[in-house]
Amino acid sequence: MRLAPVPALREIRLYLAHPGSGLRRLLEPDDGDEGEAEPQPPYWAYAWAGGAVLARYVLDRPSIVAGKRVLDLGAGSGLVGIAAAKAGARAVIAAEIDRNGVVALRLNAEANGVAIEICEGDVTAGPPPAVELVLAGDIFYAQDVGQRMMPFLERCLAAGIDVLVGDPGRAWLPRSRLCLLGEYQVPDVGGNGGGEPKPSAVFALVAEPG
Image (cartoon, rainbow, N blue to C red; front, side, top):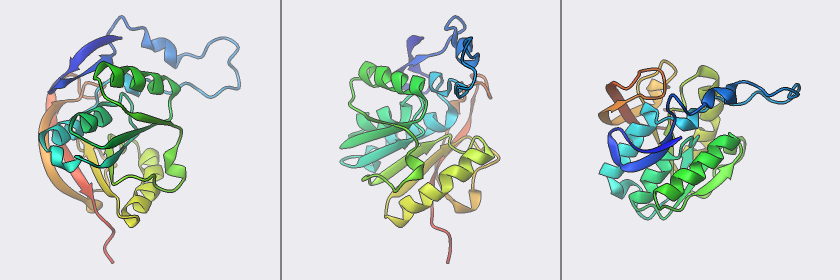
């Protein structure tokens, strides 16, 4: 992994994948691992568009997070949480289920000189943590993932917690529940869109009518 500035977010540096990083081995179980859970793809090794646009939005509008306790949901590399910390959040909790992602989170937070509390495990199974804002980048990349996330986000809204979503317009976005707040051109360097800038947006999740 190489520590490098994030495209469109030069204020933040992350340990990112490159052709010689050998991350392919994380997708191939070791001998003797039969019966163990399959390793998670290394999402944490890339700056995805939804996280990038959410991080850019927060850095450009620090009042959104200033003085607040913030949850970075499905944190991956920690890009969004790092942006929130740099923008003046009182505390940042980063939720990540992948053990390699947790290590990457710690390294990236340290490289950017910010303090982030890492919650290792599935926070969506329980009640919302004691935060005032949830930042959710790229959580609707697959239908089943989005369906698992929504009940938790509903509980957050019911508890008076604001929820912001960053996404480049994937098919599984719950569009009827989203209010557009801002749009940027950012690279989706995580594999789907190469390195070319593409429109990505930040939305507020709103309660279901009625």
